[in-house]
Length: 312
Image (cartoon, rainbow, N blue to C red):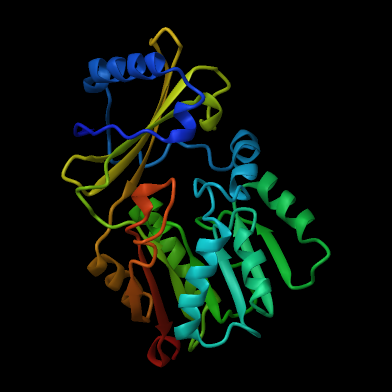
């Protein structure tokens, strides 16, 4: 079993303006008292209901909120990524892009402005896909598919110029799911296809708390104070994201968690080469940026290219 290490406290200004300080401190004192009660098995990497209506209804407005990077990165940061990517894949006009785990297709709005020929997004939440299909319904350059990427492998009939697996998708996969994703990428790629995205790196400094109101928490309807905790677990190979919802009296109401696997640059190289993609470049693109998701600013962005040998 894995337990969280002790974590320092950091507060978001917008949360402090909404919540009385004494309630926040009471909730934190309660957290310190009960922290030893929470330990998790690495087999349970996720308990967040990604495909449910509640998850969709909570996250849809956050995806498009340009004041936060909580669900999708803000458009300004996505544009920075795609401008960096175009240095290696060539001019984006005319390119066909596949976005795996696309959510409502925020990336599509950026890529279409940059002139791509077609965007295909794939997501496992039907409510989110329906919303995205309605938003882009009049644009023949956009297709949004409802598929479970980790179970439905053969559903793409064409090859793509660029495949995106962005915002820590690789960190969220169990090892057996990684092999399913590899099969899908093999179907969707041909000689010269580029694979790009970002991973969260192992970093002992990536430990923080965020404290806010319960509307920040997408799993429960109960009101109260939500502490959203990020911390290293066990040996540091896993990073935990745990929410704890407290009543205003300070008593714990509900707790849930989500683990991500922390990766190294060498892990990324092994993954790319296992797929037949030669790593071209990587960098910590957002290290000097501002974000309310501080633990993602050191993410390693990457691009690789499918080799001739892999396609033969």
